[in-house]
Image (cartoon, rainbow, N blue to C red; front, top):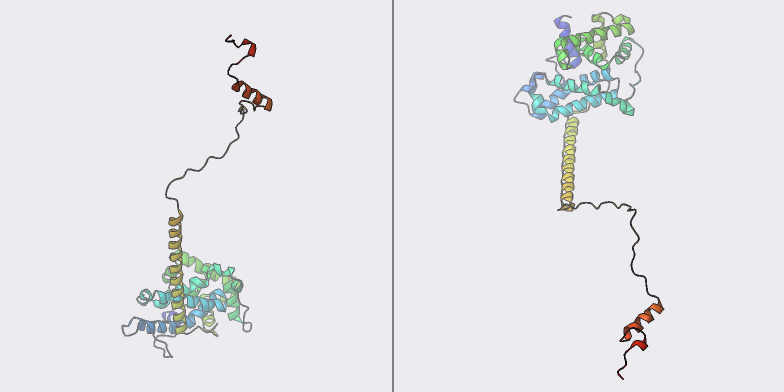
Length: 301
């Protein structure tokens, strides 16, 4: 691919070419100027990159609602970390990487609305065939192919953005091209594939992105909710600790030993209860001064 073609592919897939004049669009270099406020710089980046990112996320996921959600999520993160994003060498690339990560997350399959791709729209044609074939590839293959052949990025840049080694990114690209060639034979050569990918990324918008102000407000609202939730959780933990300290015993009390059955112990014994007759006899013996029969008592005369 020639340098001019690569520049054209990059401009087509990521936004208007440098120097293009349209409402709200500014070149990426303007984001680093000291004249722009953070809000103005963020809005300029959003207007510049969001529409194309929605198209790219739709090509990767096949879901229009998820594509818009991925872009808004990425810009929420960018606004939360704006001091970091504003000084990045490629702010649009930072947001693009976050968009791709969200759009290709396997957890979306657990959501009923995103279990299956949206039904294809538009008439039968080569672009529709490419979209369907692209969705059948593994997620890393889709991402590598779109970055290299769709956006015209170099292989080292693709490897860095996909967090893979350059040889691994090259193998993914080759396997992705071979798989597409099996499903769409006319795309076996790189040039027709690149032209078709550019058409895929420039056809009718998948869905209109929200306004920059809406995205910023959504990000700030999410931060407020997280902050309030963190404060509430911290207060709950402190209250639980205070309750535990107030109700915990101050000294050690050993637990009572469980009862056990005791065998081979003799029955409690002792003197038998006196009968009424025995009680009368005892009273009589106690009352008489001399024990024994009266005939044995000595007589004084």
